[in-house]
Length: 291
Image (tube, rainbow, N blue to C red; front, side, top):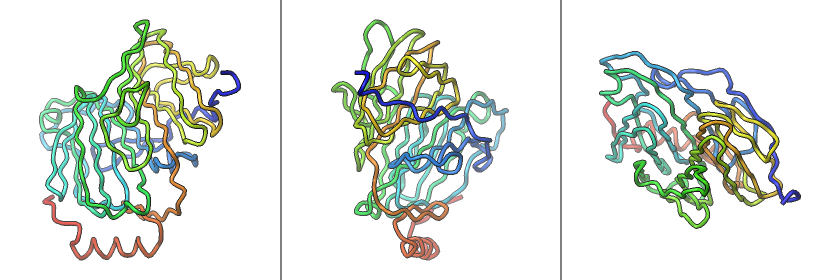
């Protein structure tokens, strides 16, 4: 196995946070925080654990458009409600996942769930932007709301913990979310001393977010809470060991080798498509959503 280890490229500390709306205090690991190859994952905003005070008026982000990609929100602490112009709405609680395919265009808003807002408390989330291949960018929007108890789970031996398979496959356990390109997304919930192994193709872009605890990777590198581990595009095998009770978001996917044009909430292939998205939005073609 030694020759086939997928080695760590870097262990990255959380960049300085910024607010998204008034409800999300995020560290952007990429693309602005670090210039790393993570396609098909275009963006990773990590809302490290923060305590929000009680408030009657929920904090959040008002109505905004998306086109050309998917947003994936994974809840670890707190609760987020959302609405979109395709008529979807829902709330995600700790362990839940909201996988929204904006594709051809959607209006969206997300904010702290009303009861959580009134009580206040710990809040911790991850939001990913997952790029879509050119042929799928103008697909109809869709929504996958995946409750924690619906997520496929693989129980590790020796009481090491559990792998929650959000997307992709882990040792024959298939993920709960459907994806447009090959993507693996897992929550590895490991007990102190627990070990887990992963195997991804060498060319897949791979990274871990340490959501809780700390781990040792391939018997060597150590990564701590709120850090991001980026792997080299070589080798296939990774072993992690929890140095305390830990939660690790595992991401690995086949890169989409197509040009990218991005402007604000639009992620397309050409500047002409960006201009079209702006025009369509201004003409109301993304539907209607009340503030």
